[in-house]
Length: 200
Image 1 (cartoon, rainbow, N blue to C red):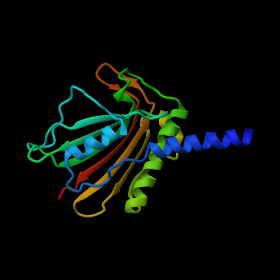
Image 2 (cartoon, helix red, strand yellow):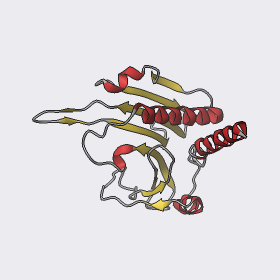
Image 3 (cartoon, rainbow, N blue to C red):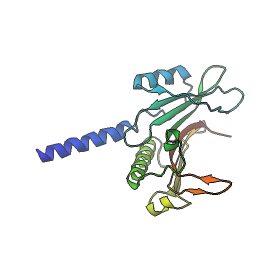
Image 4 (tube, one colour):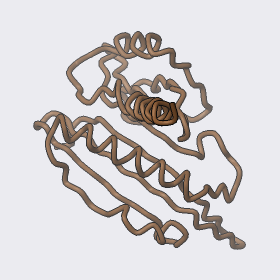
């Protein structure tokens, strides 16, 4: 019975991890905003409102933003940027960021939480690499002692499937906090994945 319980627990953990890395649209192939809005509605996402103004060009509308609930990591915000003329989506941003929901200064997190964020990033990059091959990688997430330093843990990965678009991901994990008379440097716990047109 004990072994059965362990298997069930492992299966649930795997299922949660898998569900949090699937349903990512990793290409820009001319789909309209309506397609992605329908997808988010099907997934049970909530439309997310903020007071920010985003600028990506004169022909670009303000993005539609949706929130997907997550387990043990920040909820996922998905930004769909589209053209005013025909509503073709020109950029997708997936963002897991503590500061989206915790606005206070010095929002340090536990090492256990940071490890889960690292695991999430590794799962995401593995998923993208399974589709597009190995990424051009810069940085490393191996030295956990850097989490409490000014440098923090940082890594960037870029995939270029063709000359039309690219997938660019990065993660920043830092518990470093410093406040002076002029500036405040807050901890950062963030993963972003951009699906964007290639800049010629």
